[in-house]
Image 1 (spheres, rainbow, N blue to C red):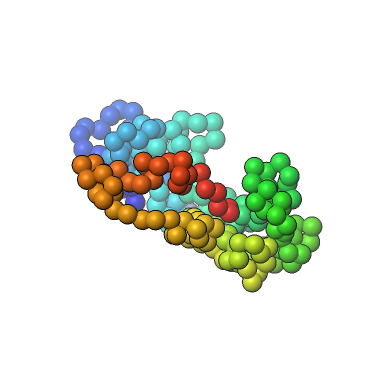
Image 2 (image 1 turned 90 degrees about the vertical axis):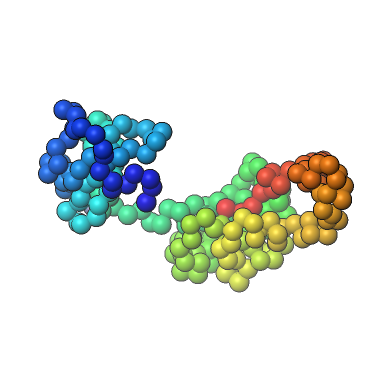
Length: 209
Ligand SMILES: [Zn+2]
């Protein structure tokens, strides 16, 4: 829950306020709530859907746009696990799309997608979902053996940090010294900041999606 969610606003009501109890499709306005500092969209309202879910939305979503909100999202048809599917598509791109910016690290090195998961296999997506499950938020697909292909045995969901550790084992062999040993009067600088060319830019390292 973000700051301001569900808390009634202080101060006088304005004549522009939407009235509590007003029904808008499946939604009923409960009350105006505090807008978190800096948040766009003007006034915010707490609403209850007929399904029982309560949501907080800016006024614009409720009355300000051509297709205003009329339910909490419970009537939106569920896409077929789009977050997981993105990973499934992306591994094919890395392996088979020669213009992919990291193709040289994947398809270019002989990394492939197994037939069981392959998009040319009519059951590829279903098999992938069955083997890998839903992609946990913030994780991406990792090949345990970095030289191996995308197969059920070789893949798991991992954090970007875990993937980098797997991809760059040589990093751990770099000499590590306390910054204070190098620059006693400037202990706030790290080796990486002092020697960006030697250590490379860690943010530039790519991981699987
Ligand atoms: Zn609902």
